Image (cartoon, rainbow, N blue to C red; front, top):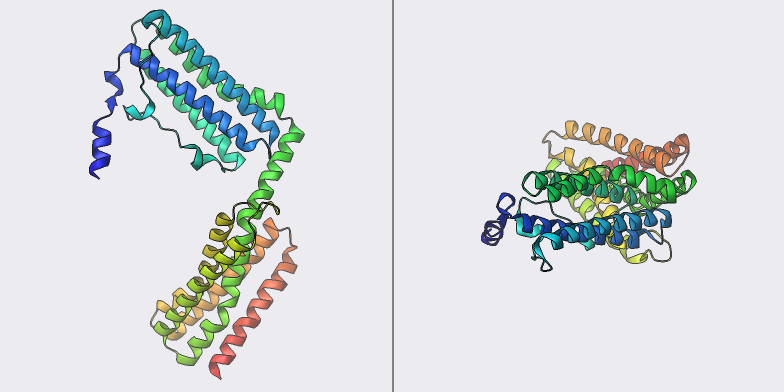
Length: 328
C-alpha cells in the first residue's frame, strides 16, 4: 500500500508538463505503440499472416508520427529529448506489458488496438490545448485527427492485406482455436463433473438423508475431480503438435468446469430440508445436462437430439444408479 502511494505521489501531473516535456512524452508514446504493434504482428504472423501485415503497417504509421514529433522537437528545443514516459505522468493511460498480450485471441488484439488509438486521440487533444506555439499545436491537432482516423486506416489496411476470404479464414481459425483451447476441455470437464459426481452425491444423500454430510461429500468429490481433471488435461498434451493451445489454459478450463459441474447439484444440500434439497438438486442436474447438450450442439456441431440422447439419457441412468445404491 505504501509503495503504491509513493509511486502515485512521485508522478507528475499532466498539467504541470512543459511544452518540451509534452513533445518528449508524445515521442515516447508513439515509439512504444509502434513496438506494441510489431509485437502483435510477431504474435500473429504464423497463425494470421494477413492480419500480421496490417499491424506491421500500423507500426510504420506510428514511426512516421514519431519522426514528425522529433523534427518538431529539434526545431524548437534541440537534440536532447528528456526521458519522460507514460508511467511518469499521473493519470496517463498505460499499456499492458508484452507478456500479458502475447497470446490474446485475434478479436481481443483488434479491440486492444482500437482502445490504443482512442487513448492516443484523447492525449493529443488535451496536449494541443496546453501548448502556445502555433506550429506545435497544429502538429498535435493533426496527430489527434490521425489517431481518430486510425480506425479508417486500419480498415483500409485490412482491405489491402486481409481480403474477405482471408478474413473469413482467420476468423474461422480463431474460432477453432477458441474451441480447442477453452470449449472442448471445458465441456469435457463439465460432463465429467456433472455426470461422474451424480452417483456418489445421490447415493450419500439417500443413504444418510443428512444434507450437511451430503454437501461435504459433494464438495470433496467436485473439488477433487476438478483438480484431477485440470492436471490431467494440462499434463497429457502440451499443445505444440496438436495445436490445442496452452496446456495451462486448457487445464484451468477443464478443472474449473469439472468443479462447477459437481458443485451445481451439491450446493442445494446446504438447504436443511432433505426432500427440498433433493428436488432442487435433481432439477439442477437436468439443467446441467441440457446445457451440456446445447454446448455440444453449438460448438461441437453435434446434432441436438443425439447430444440429448447421449448426455441426458446417460446422466439419468447415473442419477438413478446413485439413488438405487443409496436406498440399498
